[in-house]
Image (cartoon, rainbow, N blue to C red; front, side, top):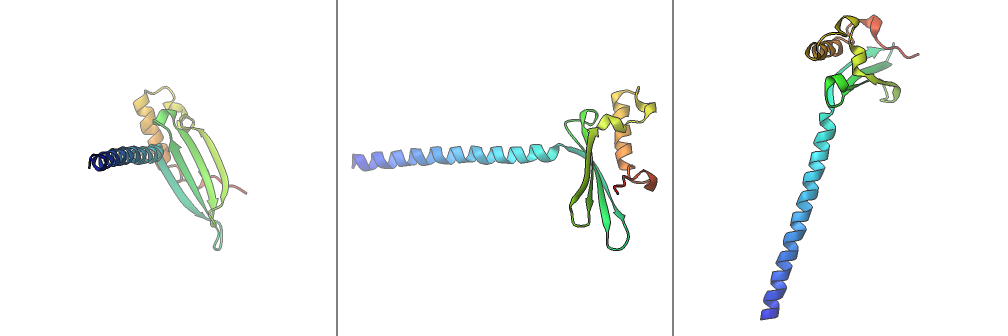
Length: 129
């Protein structure tokens, strides 16, 4: 009877440790997913018709830890979803000359405004030939 109790007790301890170790792995996976998705700070896109059924989707994405140290990525895809062009540069390159000497709060607000209005003027759209 003692060996049966000992085996049952041992089995319970092993099951407890296995269940605890698998819970940690799930929590780590969820944490990784949230870190990846939280790196995108701002995004703006437009679909530009190219004649007939052809079109291009242009997307400007700012990713990083904060707006002033972010990376701006301009990506152009065709109607099939294939990448036509992808250019990355520092987000501070979006700051206009008159805001270069402003404080960080004004620079962040200006970057937000530039991204929001990036595709409004058709003459400033990126064109890949």
